Image 1 (cartoon, rainbow, N blue to C red):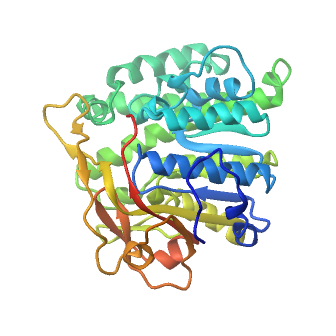
Image 2: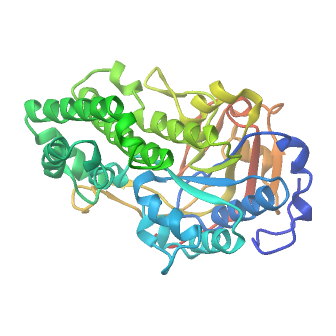
Length: 381
């Protein structure tokens, strides 16, 4: 499929050939090789319009904090005020292309929004604790006191602070979250006397995501100490899959936006292990009712990630020019002078771009379709 344009406001007729590939899929997942790329945001917006306006999809969920996204969901549904940029984590709300997507969602009135991800840029569980007092204020206050010791605005320094905590305090945080979860579940009939079931479900899911963030930290700590088996405990992608399942249980027909690596239908090979992804979970649940569209590019300029001992985030994000497609990559097969979307399930490619390098995996098994753009540029971060 050769696309006429990336303009999200343009007519959608050139996307009609996608109809057969999408069929009755309950989930269409749209990826990207890296975040903060202008052209990926434009194409995802355009695909979302097509899926909502012509295919009847009802909800959009993004790789962004669930708790933070509640305010954005209310705004998309017509709530008062300006666009809540802090309703998206990882600075996604700073990009004008992203804001335009959500402005269209609000104006259309036809699509709901939910954040898929763990809270606080993986650097804090405090956003997920704000509404949990109903499950036991004393327990929540005790968790909050421990979580505040390591919480921060950036992931890597927060993890360093978590590692610096005494093991007894880390264990106490885990035990308290388990107790809080038991209270929430054991007292569910009483909670439902005072709050609607949907509100209980949302709050209970916030607690679940706090538990999974705690477990992600514990697994990372064990991995840092040399445990190979804990490297495969990808609680973050499991959490995003749980959010997606909750939305599907509500009857939504769902569009997901996330990085290609999260959406791969096959586990990612890392250090001789298989790391389950969001896409792996969904493929096991849905089979052919899941369609994964990876977004990539032949060339262009992106912001990559480099570790830095002096940057506040523990990393820097310099712009880099991408090299021409490498041999054996899906980009080397699809590169052209116009945007194209191709069914890759019969193609032989062993790698796909991720940031300014490549992820080695069987592309034909990992993704159903791949959209390859001629070139990309950074957006606002």
